Length: 589
Image (cartoon, rainbow, N blue to C red; front, side):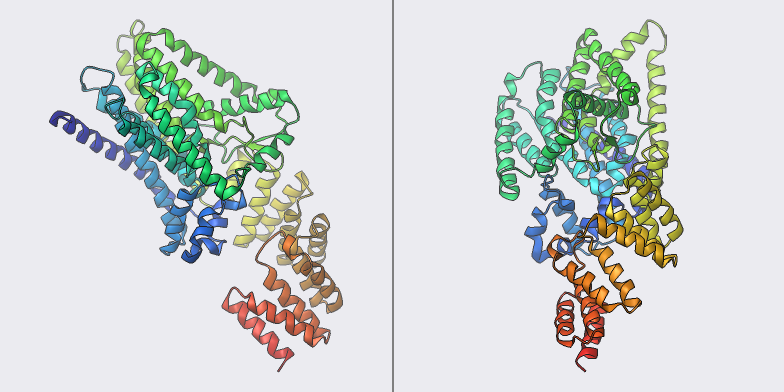
């Protein structure tokens, strides 16, 4: 590398760091947000992730018990923070923002390398163009979901490693093994963060055609990627078995009733991603899910917009070299989006499939890479109409970035906690029953019991066969002093799912308060016989404790002692241990 090139690289690094600093400043308020939704299970409610001695089990454990997710590098990033004693949400938000800023820096360097490779020598327009691409990516409102929502770190880390892979692919000489090994290694890192890194394999041929005009000079890169894919599949097989953990995705095909619906699901998913990418200033629903079956009329406007944008990008190929590059890079963007477009259904909840903006973390890198070429095409088209075409485009670019900053700042408080996030989703028209269910759970957590009851009743009105809704409704009724309504809710939950151990425990407490000890014991004995099928792990100690208390009240001292000793062995807190010891002393003074 010549001294001139090193100087240019140093300037590019400084520009990238400045872009990253702007992005970090815009996202700074997110550091005050709480955990939301999926964050609670691995980061708060699963002791295994906090215990270094269980590192291997935790590393290979799928988040949320979903075997499709084999993400050891991303899981390790969470575990390292927990081992360091970082149990509040703030440090996790900080790391998410830092990862996103690192991707911004890599994109600036990538755009610089791409543009320098296409002209005889770097000119004054390269660095501003690279910085503009970095800011467009870093401030893109569609990426607010993965940055603000801690559980989307999988997407952020995957995008970081894939940005690194694209940058490594530009290493010179183009026919060297160094380029291939670096690209393959970065891809393997991305795959160990999230399985949708496969999008790189689909997008890279179009990326090479766009920038190199042929694939033959990159054969070593494809060998390295093939080898990395085999290593990933071997590791996934070892962790997840012969099915590779894909059972849920296979089962989800059953929710799509026909071949026509399958096509419509894919087309609608792709259209939403395109819409979110090119006009992200409205309609961004948190963790968007498409309800099955999809009604064609409901998605027609967004499909029409997606088709128009795609047609315009492809027609740009008629506009000379810059147009052909733009068209091929746009196709690379579409290829990167394809794995998340429900070709194989992304397992949603209750007959839904996901089409969330968080899946754009990597594809948007490729779309932002089109911007310098789109600029040239647009400037050429406008030059015959406007005297100051470049000035007009500059004003539009500044307005876009300013609008993005304002939009992101407005979205951050909407992710402040589970209540704000689910209210936002409902207001956006995503009034699915589980949104109301989540909202009810949040209100219970903060002690807003009347609001909780109202939200849970909405959930039950929309879908009354979910045991958890009835359980939480019963909890709200208990807090509001309506024992009769609470008992009905708990019994309804138990009727829907005999393994609903929390409802069983609450009913047993109510029976014991009424001194119906035999009825309480009967409820708890049935629960003890099915503990291995219980809907919520971690309640075994409470069941043994209550059953011991019921036996003690019935004068069955030996059985009471056995149950209370089992409760003592399972005690998870000093309070539970003290209660079990006191109960034992009352049985055996």
